[in-house]
Image 1 (spheres, rainbow, N blue to C red):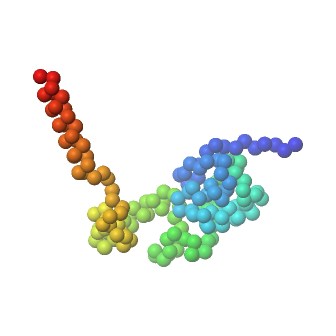
Image 2 (cartoon, rainbow, N blue to C red):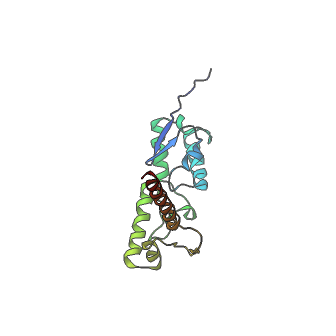
Image 3 (cartoon, rainbow, N blue to C red):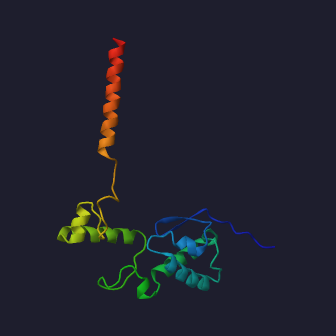
Length: 164
């Protein structure tokens, strides 16, 4: 008889809570900085090292295996075309909170030196050349709200006038 391994509902990797019922390659995509292609590469490497199937649920791994997965991803030698920070000033791949922090720092630096991208970020405009006239508008339209408030105020005045 096969022993049923207990499946953890939630697994914590790189500061991210991951559903334990997902297969390994899909679970890795939930980590910020790891996309579909990179997750498949990591899943192949990890499954070969741990002698498990690539479709093994992430919740079935022990704590030692999860630490091994984290260390493997941190120290992986992956091709430069899969990295998310190329030539800045050297090739590297950021994952999780490191990626978020680095992105914020880059945006703040661009605002500080007042590049075109920094200017667009500072004023909340689109950065990558998209049109801004009609699409991508944020928030509610002011005119509709004011007209509704004006109607509501007029109705209240009428009600007060009728009660007297």
